[in-house]
Image (cartoon, rainbow, N blue to C red):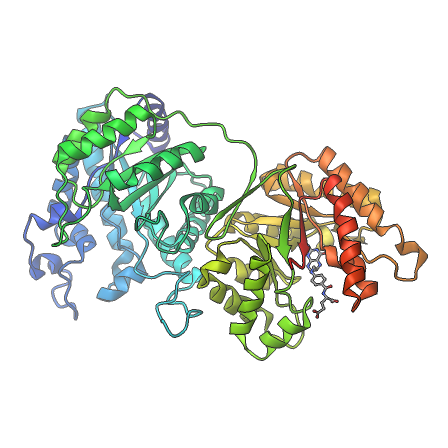
Length: 602
Ligand code: THG
């Protein structure tokens, strides 16, 4: 049977019932009491470092055991086998100096599961079995520092993760995986790198394989290890056109229940969950019995939370048998329609839609917009620069705009440094980031630093359609929303008609050609300075307001933004006058449909 048929079977099965993933690989491997020599086999007999405990290596050196475990889970009723490849990336295997074996580990892992799945499908054609290629989180975090003395340091970069996940995904697909799952996500930036990598692999191969994500909530706070709430996590990975979104590991079913319920309400995708067999005891063992675990998961199935279910640490074929039994006969969760709203995230989510409350974007973390901030960054006083960001948030900024475009600065390095430092400050990084630069390289470097769903500020048709399409496509792959300036090949629009025409053209290209969701498009029809002394500038505020109204009437779901302080540039130094002008302007602009503005939040 070929991959296309299997995909169709998978989709069909998921409309009829809850599908069952297998259980833990590690718990099963432990029962074999393997020694160093088993892990080494012939191929790694002389390998210079100890290999015992490198479970993924057994796909090469004890394939009989891995195949037997897959068989035991399928016999227990599992529909989907997870490949034995959780640590099969060059990053994780570096601990064993086995970076060079990564392709073989993934190929072997996928082929083993494939062979056993095909054996069962041939024997029981009414229950086709599937292979899910597993991409683990690696042992590094892209959005947290491993060095307590330097919160801006990173042990791994986005690009390194993309390279590692690309190698892994290629080999898993070559080995015959039907699905790919990025699982046990504890740092969303690692996950976003995996999603970026996998989509790149699909594009090169012309493949479209179901892509699943399963996150991990690490404690009772309900947050991921990297500090995101569940909704923030969902908002941050939603761009990748996922087959399902779920939770696994860290907690048992009892502790996970409220989060699975929340996810089932939030996500317009299938929902999966594979919990641990309870919380570990003082010896790190999982004790929850198959019956206890199955009773809880059966209740979730009755409550309509599940499309895919299975087990993580501590689960055995007995658990999977009991779970399969408990969910049998319960219809799968119906995927809800969710409204088209803009879903952004820092550590916390931010939802916006036309007509929702006006959102303030803090303007002060901008080296061209604040001489104080510029001085601090130039002197390398990032502690005080962070205080500027903190004050913006404390004063009501719900997003912060970060701009490092200054001739005397290495803008890209400054953007990366500052965003990495922000990530370590939960009172700042709770809000989404707007990455503001006129240089694409600076924007792209910034996108590789944020685990949440941020906003690119900005792209435009200034350099023509191909460049616009290319950048928009990348923005989407990185998972950000985008500000589009009313700027085209002829220059920046200053009349109502040109502002509206350019935005309409950009909207068409983005939604029809790039596949950009309209709710992730934020138009900026240019707020220019008025009262400059030149008569032709006196209509600029009115032109913005009218453009705003027309854009909102004609381009559904998009948002409108603008840099409010631009308006009063002629009155620099007279803050009272400026504030009064901004207040009057915003009063009208919000009525005209302006959704958000870059402002001095204070
Ligand atoms: N649209 C979009 N992005 C933007 C703008 C826009 N980014 C930059 C800018 N315009 C918005 N940000 C600012 C920030 C500060 C000021 C104006 C716009 C400002 N600063 C005082 C000044 O220059 O007088 C600061 C003085 C000081 O403290 O040094 O006015 O339009 N998409």
